[in-house]
Image 1 (spheres, helix red, strand yellow):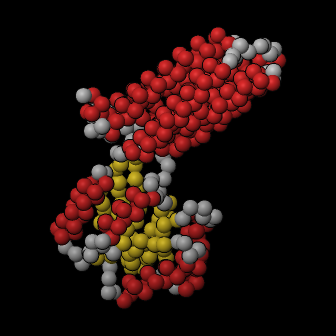
Image 2 (cartoon, one colour; image 1 turned 90 degrees about the vertical axis):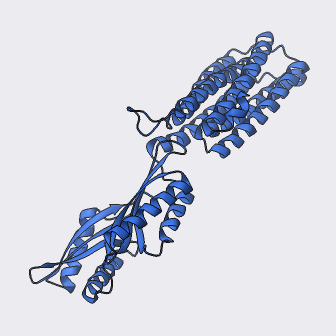
Image 3 (cartoon, one colour; image 1 turned 120 degrees about the vertical axis):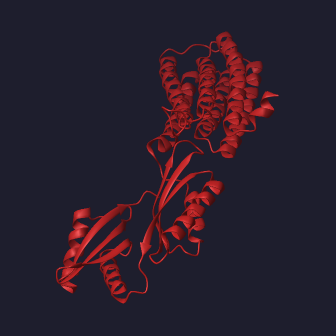
Length: 376
């Protein structure tokens, strides 16, 4: 059966969830639209239109999961995984559009209020709608966590916002029936505010992976642990993770190893680590070897000097790829410096300050520094 087959892949499961959302929202929008037109309540009609927009966004999510499931091709060698993010973007945009239209209609109702023809049956039907959207939201949230989907997370937030929106409508009808208070327009404004808030929140969450946010810390720690567990590895740096979808990552990293290792041996170790990373995290990994000189007194002395100067500037600064070559009557220190986030100095200021301090301590020495700004 289709639904059983859907659960076998991440994208298939996402399509199944999106299809369920289409069915539920289509049913709810039809019921609410009928009630709204019969009663003349703008808040109910707006709620129905909100559910109708959810049908469209669920359809877009369905299309997004289908496109993201397509394999890489000549024009898209990294696959189509980011189509899912675009689907989530449409979900957020739809929420904002509906919230804006509802706000305008509600303000008009405040200016020109109309009687509401609704009773207990209407309230009961809307209460069932709240329950349906609540369980749909729980289903979306479960699915979002299961397959790590930003689009489904946005849909879950949208569903919970709809629950609150419909609850406000029920309260407004109750006040009209029992206290002859017409707050239909005001309730619509209140509902629109929550819809807009949810839309902008979802938009922010979706834009992060599209713009390139920091990778999951658990993934970063896991990659570093596997590499550092190799006995020949002395350190790692310059880890970069590129995301082309929720589960499509390309990773590169520099791995420090003893300079005395034979080239073939180092190559075999790197190959083994790349295969282990790929099998463990389902990522494409490329590792680069950085040779580290050991047991050389002059080398160690110059490295310790460079580390001391960096610590004087800022204790968060660390160096790697350190080399020492002859320079006139002294030495030239060549190395990279990992610059932390929120570092106040410019690259030029940092280099000049290091150079001045080095000359104070060793007048014949000079430094060539490459600054690395962190990506993970």
